[in-house]
Length: 105
Image (tube, rainbow, N blue to C red; front, side, top):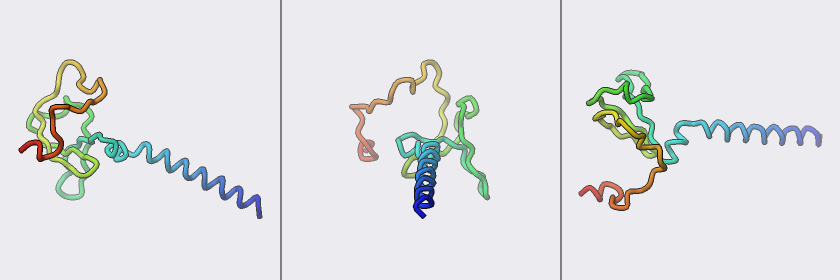
């Protein structure tokens, strides 16, 4: 019986490791860390949103959804940013910007 208990414990450990690995690749786990997923809105009936991977595939004025940790924003594309990649450096908080909607009023 002891060998079966050890085997069961080892399989439980293996399953927990596999669950951690799966969670690490979950796109919503990335969103929980402060990033957003940008998608084309789903079709009205039974569709799924299509992830945006290339700014060249988005037309100015196109409405998109930005999936955040606590909800979804509807956004409108203005155009692609050209030149240096604005995300190449680590994001730093803007010391002059307030936080949240109250800062906009």
